[in-house]
Image 1 (cartoon, rainbow, N blue to C red):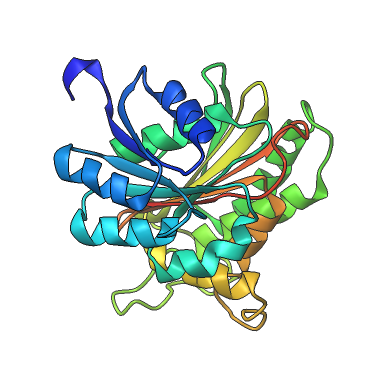
Image 2 (tube, rainbow, N blue to C red):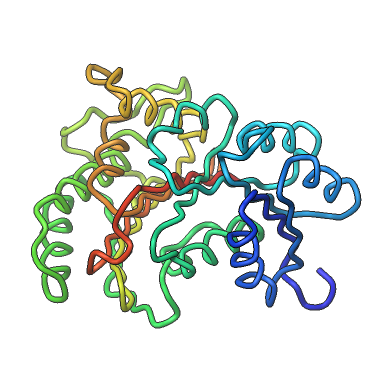
Length: 303
């Protein structure tokens, strides 16, 4: 990108204050365009190269999700994200119907570090790795490779012990670890016919190509854990479908999706990164204080 900019971002919001705030935040690294409605947005898109469109959900005239659907139809290579001050769970079904997988919260105070991280990752498609979601002062505390199911309990207990050295004990973190690790060990590896290779809770020794990689890290405001498997079995559509069913209470008896739903429910941030048929990464982040608690975002990235 010319002038040393990373890429070009279009911000669409009917509130001038929000547009201006986000434009100022991004303009040092990106070419930034702004529009107050869909008509202005499409005029800009017809005249300029844009890598990412970020739109408010509720605007007069065409709603944000309608705008992004039409953007994808006309410009399939452009990345998209919604932004809203409302409960994002109320929009997951809409997101599924319109192929939208990133909804950013307008928190109070606004989380500029998170916003910058999400924008950078979407524009560059550099989505994998816990450090991309931590601040520059971050520390990677420990990494693990799980090759056998017998390692799971020991790894979970060690991670919990390490977390309690800098944060008060949180019982739900064990649920997070259990769900994400067992999903990666038992559900990610599949046979050629697409069926799962291993039976849950059985004694398993993974092939070298199936080893699950974990990273525990922290920065000045939060800690996180990344769980990476090398299957790439999940798709964005599957994640949205499962989250939608569980959020609306329709998936209580489903065998699939419970772990993702619980992980999102018990973490401050759940990020799902997918490279089709290559790898899947689940990252959970928890803040050390209440500053950025609130409505949970939707972050599902697929490259």
